[in-house]
Image (cartoon, rainbow, N blue to C red; front, side, top):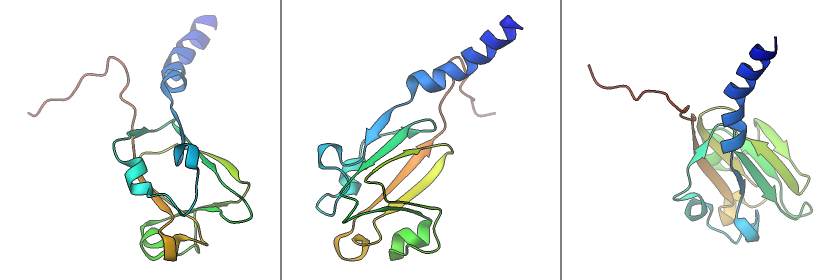
Length: 130
């Protein structure tokens, strides 16, 4: 039983140890004065990482949307809405992720799109073409 627990822990531990936390917008936070395409450029996001959205909750929110919601600044329907001013969103699945502020997406382009990658497990062989 102890060996099984340790084995499971070793499988989960790399995900926890290598997870990275990103404060969206860095010290500027989530607001309409920042270019979030530029902020995300050069960053690599992986499953297990966390996005911290810090903002004035009287002025902003974070809406998780699909591609259409992102492109057209549509807050509804959505995949989740946050308005605490300090929201932590864990990246649990790979793929494109889209976030908007429903109040400032249209006129100030306050939106973020990222691509989340699967973590490469240590010791996983790289496949070669056949």
